Image 1: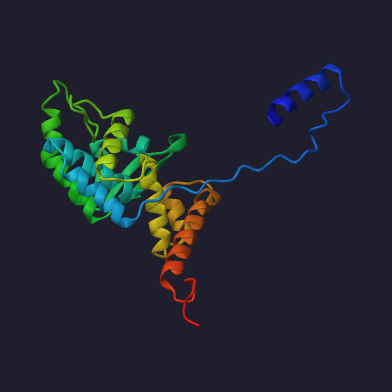
Image 2: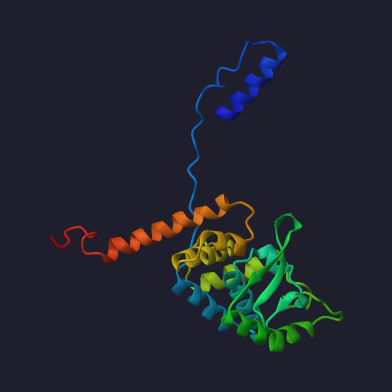
Length: 233
């Protein structure tokens, strides 16, 4: 409402109807910054296991590799669906991605992701490719053998998350949030996490330090005898 009134007052000032905007010096209420949703390591494992148990097998292999890459490399969903097979270097655990602003970077991933990608490339992707008359260079394919789009990937992830019993607020970016928070929980340097996420500003990455601190405080409160109400004296 203040924003709407401000628009009117600025118009009236320009028209000469009022001498100045009386709202100019008024302090605007600061919108509370919401902390990112984060999964526990156990929840991530449950999501991956649920994807691996899906049917048909080609979908299960693809969805498992998709989740492993989102979480293992901390990628955005738009980055993942734009990856081509040639962008992968499984021997080095690297993938070349194009992020925001069309900026390229190299993202890293570990052995579980390498294994999932190898299985998908060996068995899952050829089955999906068989449904297409053409040849696609995209890493992730849909049921017609065409590149899997962002909307299709989101739908698959949403369905898998529901089967895994994850919180209703789950979305693909939750895996990226979890990637960053788990790294910080494990002692990773903030600037390293910034590089891995492809953030230009360190300030963008710093929000995850608050998530990590909140998680640590929760663990402290539940585990330390002096933190629990009625604890040892």
